[in-house]
Structure formats: structure tokens, C-alpha cells
Image 1 (cartoon, rainbow, N blue to C red):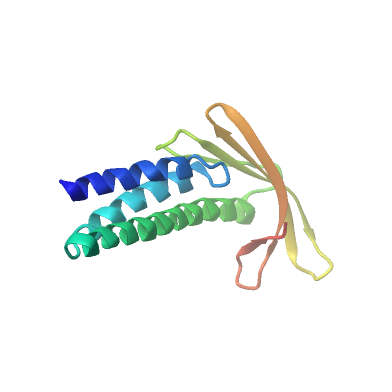
Image 2: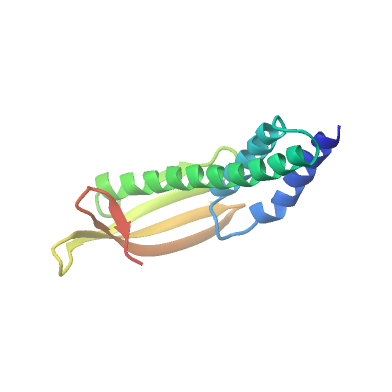
Length: 150
């Protein structure tokens, strides 16, 4: 019973962190879900204070891992748009857990002074009906990936 209370308490403490707008909604969900899974796994280790420490450690580790997995998924979709879309052609996806919608549109393609293929792009994110947008430049690296330049 006490361990269940600790898991719920940790989950509730993570909610304000999940509300930060410096992460994508997918990262928020990944962080919360990862933290919950980590807390449950941590609850199977040890007894007493050791178990409580394992729950806390599992929650933190799971939260960080879940957020990173979600960030990589969004980045992979943006990379595909930069690699395969024509200038002006958008790629869109949504997060079914939160309802947030993402769009990446390459806007121009050119060679920079170092001879790298570069693309300017625009991101549009719709969260709770509100549009947030950004723009930047990415250049293709020797391994074929696109590195955000700004």
C-alpha cells in the first residue's frame, strides 16, 4: 500500500514538469509514461528505504529515457522531411496521445560555403488549438543525417 502511494505521489510530482513548453508534447508523454514504468520496476527491488530509493531512481531514469525516445521519434520525422520533401512540400504528423499536430516544411535548398547541402525549413506545431512555429537551417552531414545549424 505504501509503495503504491509513493508511485502515485511521484507521478503527481511529474505533472508540473510535463507542462513545461520547452519540450514537445510527445516528450512530455514519454517522460511521464517512462517515469511511471520506471517507478513500477523500481518498486520490485529491495525493501523499506532501499525500495523507496529504487522507486525514485526508477522513476527518474524512466522519465529521462521516455523523453529521449519521444524526442528521437520527432527528430526522425523531421529528418525524413528534410531528406525527401521538395521545397514547399510539408510533412505532417500528430501525437495521438495529446492531439498535438506537427508540420515540417523545407523552404529552400542550397550549398553553403563549405560545400554542404543545406535546407532552410519551417516547423509548425498546433497544441490545444494554438499555433507555435519556428524556422531554421539544417545541413547534411557526411553520414547522411541533417544537423540543425541554429
